[in-house]
Length: 305
Length: 305
Image 1 (cartoon, rainbow over the protein chains, first blue to last red):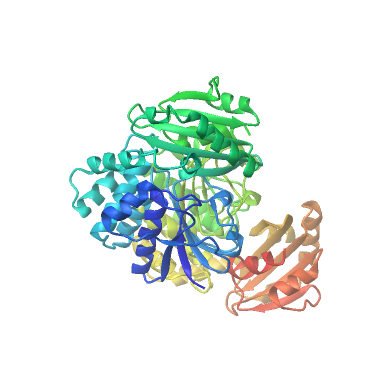
Image 2: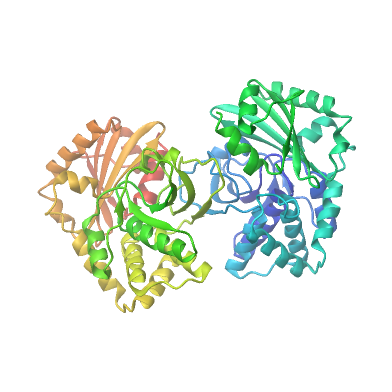
């Protein structure tokens, strides 16, 4: 029996860096843990790992009879299929309280902040453990990614504080420039299939018994999608059928305009329209100021189910 | 809309003191919160409140449209009936991850320690907020109660550390003597009806869809129950029928012998026997070294369902 630290099924930078940073902290505290991941690494995360000289965590999708720490999620829909057979020792997360259960007491560090790595930074401070320079750089990038360089409504004072302290440890003065560099990498949507794009940051939610998949792509210029909407809808349609999903939503977020183009395939379009008080045209709507799936999409959609 | 801080349905000292201590901390941090309780106060808690000069928290059982912080529980079976209509801002607890859900991100301070007030003490330290002398005394008592003066297998180094630090703030040198004084009060089982005794520290659990009620009484000498077993079973039978419970268990814990006499009424006696590897005689069994419902009863029973 080993102890693994990992994030949600379609890993983003926060969950990959978080697996590495939380595992490192636990090891420093005398536990023997292994960082892992449930899926492929996206281009932004690859950029971060390369920049700071870290390896990808181990790819592992089965966790029966293992001990696990979860980072950046607490929903069964984002868990390994055999999660009920694993022993959850702890959860570090910044989302809503999901539907996972345990049979024994556990450790939970959950805060309504913009990024899991902000919480991990607070844990390092709590235990008075030093953060290695390059790990601090990765954690800083995770915060800049999750908070869209502090522009997301999910961003809190705790996130900006943690990010600035991590930048200092990493010896990086212009951390916003690193953030922009990262988002330009993230904006490269031309070297991937449309299916890969929809799945790049895709999460399933259980809303009133229905499976709702919601993807998000954050770019510095929304125009890159102009010629590929039809193909994106094709990929969404595939995912809707394959996964027996009630709805598949895709948020195309323009981080400069600070809003999102919403693409919708749903068995009940009205629920989506009511949730965001919009009328869809060509199964799309522009949602001004909407940048956060967690804070500006899920709670409103969930109320409809 | 107000913000309330409260513990589980049948409050014990940890959940009453926790409501007061967590509410005080939140108020110091600039939030406006009110400590409350879901039910009547037990004799041990009355002793603690009187000793340190605190009032009972407000009795309140409906929380629709209110903001709430939960302390010492995260199970719907121990929640107000309208919990789904409240907004859970945070949870401070030391139990297993239950079945509550939220639609928005929240704050969770959950640790596998012996007492919720140990976690609240750590929160005071984290925020660098001073604990008033008498509040520290109450928090110390809550820890001594939940850990059975450090004898329970749930007791951790963090609990003893927090308890000793709180005793120092409270100006109490012989904290173990205060603990014994408290348990002698708790051992007075003669001035209550048998129904009150069974309900004094009673919690319902959902195990595989079945409702299981488990009470516990901790005394310094088990012999006090010798003449009242039959009446205790009568009271348990009432609760089993009224609540449509699959099983009602009562643990009579002798804190000096460090073990528990288990009383059982169940639709499936075998499940209980298998859980603890005992043969019941007259619907009873002696469980040596068993002092913790959370750690030594629930996980084993749950596996049977």
